[in-house]
Length: 173
Image 1 (spheres, helix red, strand yellow):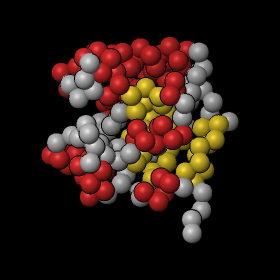
Image 2 (cartoon, helix red, strand yellow):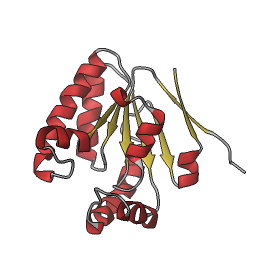
Image 3 (cartoon, helix red, strand yellow):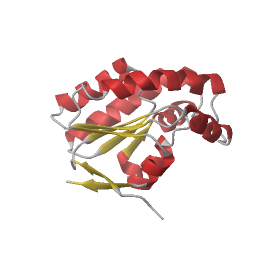
């Protein structure tokens, strides 16, 4: 028996931030609901610049590349999903500024799953993060959840369980 569908209606030209700690399912969510060309992944950008998605020394260059690609897609009015933790207010502010500069709506989809769920999922990943990193990211999640209401998104959603995530249907306006 399935629950009610959670409908996420997105503007066709929006910037969509996925927000959540490692192991919350952001990349799986992105691949389930968006075309590969619509998703800009911080891990894939690290792999692009350093041949290793886990090479944290490549983070600055990876995000420079991600921001450039985001600018180009929004300039063309293309829906673009940013698949990164996006847990820190300053990083979300940079992305929101890019969307505003191009007069595009911004949406946030927060995957606020329980810590135990994130740790369990992370433990079975081939590219798992240290458990301490997942715990630190999860501590930042509460502030991110609270902030999304006031940061200026055209739309935002908070998904709090795997069942809610599974119930999502994304549509475009």
